[in-house]
Amino acid sequence: MARRSVQFWRIDQLNGEDLRAPFPARRVAEVLKKAQEAGTDRHFIGMDGTVLVAQTASFSPHPVILLDRVRSSNLPSVGDALGRRKPLPLAPGDHLLETTYFAFLKRNVIAVLTSGNGPRASRMGEYLEGMLGLEPGLVPVVREDIEEILTRLEVSRFEFALPAERLSGKLMEGEWADVLESASRLVTEGTFRISLSVGRSGRAEDKQRIRDRIQQLIDLFRRAGSVEHFDYVVAEGKDSLTGDREVVDLLKERFISHIEVDPDVFNDPRKSAAEAVAILNRQARDNEAFFALTLPEIRGSADSVPVPDIVAGGMAAVREALAAVTKEEPAKAKPRDAKPTEGSEGGADHELVRR
Image (tube, rainbow, N blue to C red; front, top):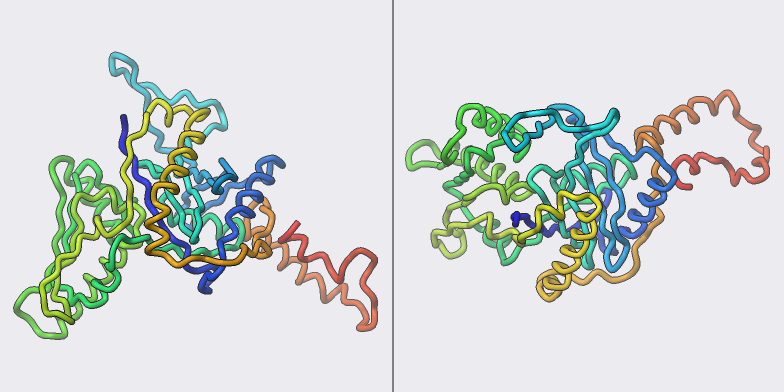
């Protein structure tokens, strides 16, 4: 058996606005299915060069979407029974797909079934923005009143640790990604640990700068979709309300279920999607009572109007086409009293976005 995790996130914003209605997940799943059946190119290239592609796995009882990281370079090797290495048996044009499964539940909760190499939860937001113009804001579902505790905490120390074999710059963002990537080349065994502390001496301004630095690191860990790869992540400080010393375990504050899966099933693409859907549906049922107690109920129906059909190249291609149309319009300007041509509905620019 192999160990995987199911993370729970919540969509709290859409395109920068508070999301007070259900996220249009079913419409997104329908759009992806339609694009897949039509043979529309669904690949998206992120700012860092990561290639992503999504497809719909299920509509009921919850929309489930697969998000793959597409790899065509730096591929692993295959070893035979004697340990002899040979390249992966990929046909011309084939790529390696590393998959994460997303189930869109009630209360705008997303259950994310991860693997070691699949895209992080934040990549789904990046994909939806790049292909559909949607910008969902994701926040982790937490178990207790951790938000209140961290708000009151005058942090004085932050520490994290992980096994050396898991060191990778992909686990974090920004300059800390560079730190972990450099460490992965220096440390290959044992445990890698970093501790930041305000200390007892020094000027108040210097201490505050260190506190601000630690707070930024805490925020980074809380947003990271790879926090379960760490063995130890804690913040320590004084509760400004009670004066008590508090130690906050950031691993335990996230709502993450650890499950055992059959590796043979997940290595078989004909079976893995169905097994992932079953696992996510089971997790949704098992944790519904917790969500009902801790998360607000989302009433109403989803607004699917902002969700366009997929265009090859995503929103970048749509914006480029619209810019070209806008550039040509002055040369083709009509008299102010001219009527639109029959069937034009005043212009067809919207057809580039929604079909």
